[in-house]
Image 1 (tube, one colour):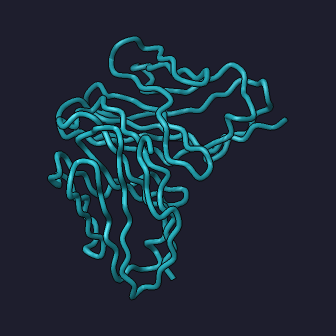
Image 2 (tube, rainbow over the protein chains, first blue to last red; image 1 turned 90 degrees about the vertical axis):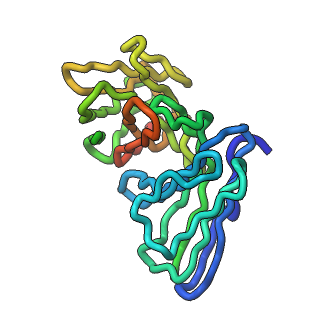
Length: 116
Length: 114
């Protein structure tokens, strides 16, 4: 595997379910990100982890719970979601632990989530 | 704070025609600017970025963009569109310094007609 991978690629869940999204980066990067992509809206940054430590929580509801056990893996645990949470969830990584502005972020293909 | 404006949601061009996708930014300090492309069922891929070196930036697949401070613009161009260019294009801005975050525009869908 190369780059940034995400599993599953598609997920359908009910509002009472608990599920997890997984992201893995094979680039040796230090920072990882979760974004939400909804139709016709800008990408929304959800969480940032730098050297496994959470450095950003962009006012995300507690029904989304991130976990970063090491610099290569990032999870997003989901529980009691709402239909408006249906979206494409993208994971990204970047090299520099300083999170400097000029860094390139490398994105995975995303998980398409549908909440019924 | 920074922001990006991408006017319109869809651009359609003929194969071989010029591609022009517009991006205007707002920033309190000189920013870094990016164009990302998203092909169907894929994540975002960096096309090019401006990081305060040359104002004309060349990227992959024949795309280029010019940073114009006086117009607060960073428009993306390609002289001759190819069918494979059909995708969604995102302009993004970030600021210098640590713990900087990317702010994306809404994106614009490019269609290429045969």
